[in-house]
Length: 458
Ligand code: TYD
Ligand code: MG
Picture: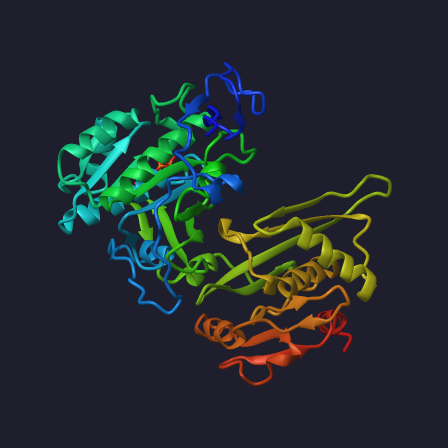
């Protein structure tokens, strides 16, 4: 039988070559190529079909076999547990991603302390701050007495060796994965190959020892720091911690979850005592409303099963002809704004082409719900016409390119929340009808009808 050929595999990009090279020809990483053991002898069938030999028979089961739900650890921080779908899952890996300074270390230290106080084994490894800094923060947050095992370290080998000596912790926080270093491969911490190799070792530990591992990952707006992107497919859960640093509010969102849904959010406020839970986000996002202001609409957004009222603000500035007008969006999708503007122009005869348009979602909140279209349109029409949207009204509905106002999910839930906060009317799709709970509904089939209503034409 022919001897199996040697295989050399790049550990950074996975490309296979027949001889060792210092630099990978495919991804240009240095010293990433490693010889892999040739596979064992193949059966004649495998040899004929070019398959590897030496495998074991695996058990095949039906889709209807019994499912064991993973054990979860609730932190007692309800907003965090909710976003994760019920707490940390044993033997799992979670990527906790967010902008630098948004509050990742603070929230995870709070969660770690809660679990430790509840009697779980918890280890917190900081590669960014000295142990004293973390202790000082814990003390300031009133968590100095929590039995968290704390270390400042950056070598994954040292960390895993240490943790393997005793019983494995239930929760291991690695802050951050960009500072970790694996000596299995070359390269500085923070490079793609280092981040990947370190994460691989830590995730293997999680799966083998039953630990819930949380990897903190910084993301930057321009994506210049390697890391979170390459990790997303390696971990079970990706939590994204969002917000504007200049604002108090933070939103935790699961963007991937192998153990649960991705539609619930957790809302927090950053204050002197760290991150506190915000059980009633609507009241918080709407605190600074003034009556009679043009260009503002309240939108009852839905996050998972939870309604959140947010204010949408638009400003339209007429330009002297000639200059290309700006469109600037904070907290919403700029493509979606372009679409709503185009429909207002093409179907309703309102011209924004010689005006600058600014759109802002108040409070540093980021709207993802497609039902925001109608609220945005109302804010734009109000800003353009300088007529305020009625202060007792909320607006929601999706807009089609045809100018049709389309129905959206959970109209009743949105209206109920708006009613709780004192609103009396809803500008909504015509289909909403009477299932709007406490609100009087002005229903619209088309965007043109809404425009007529707002301009007092119909
Ligand atoms: P941090 O958790 O260090 O952010 P990250 O780990 O995501 O980089 O939080 C940093 C900011 O939070 C910092 O600017 C100070 C602020 N902060 C508070 O306002 N209150 C607090 O109690 C704490 C601990 C931090
Ligand atoms: Mg930090």
